[in-house]
Length: 204
Image (cartoon, rainbow, N blue to C red; front, side, top):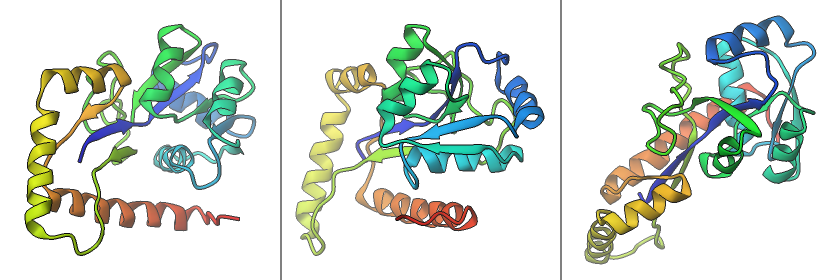
């Protein structure tokens, strides 16, 4: 496992909610008129928002875009109310004040956005969402090659230069064993299959 990018709950800058509890109250009261965006049906940003919406018990209109850039543009312009981009996508806009991040969909605070609380801290449990970059190989790769590649990768990830570069990009360095990577992939597949099925998402 190379690095992890958590999803963020980001809102238009004039959203009348300063934190996640306030946003939840606002969303529950205004869900019939609100809209959230995504980078497309079935994308990670779509599934992340679905997971969050289900956790707080709201049914809000989804606006799917053809990619993250137009979704971000419309959020900045105030044409949608929120979306759940990756940390790397949102950091420049957060830093410039064009939008606000209310929570990270992670089990711990992000080292690149330490001032933003996690959803769990704000009372929304079991709402972790993000993406993991991993070094993969073909099926049937020899075990000794896997071990050598894994060892070399973990050694590189442990250097300050590598960690600093990933941090600047808005990602969290992970590392770990091949077995841990396999287990994570299998668990994520099961989790997101259930989310997609519950929301009746069908790719066209």
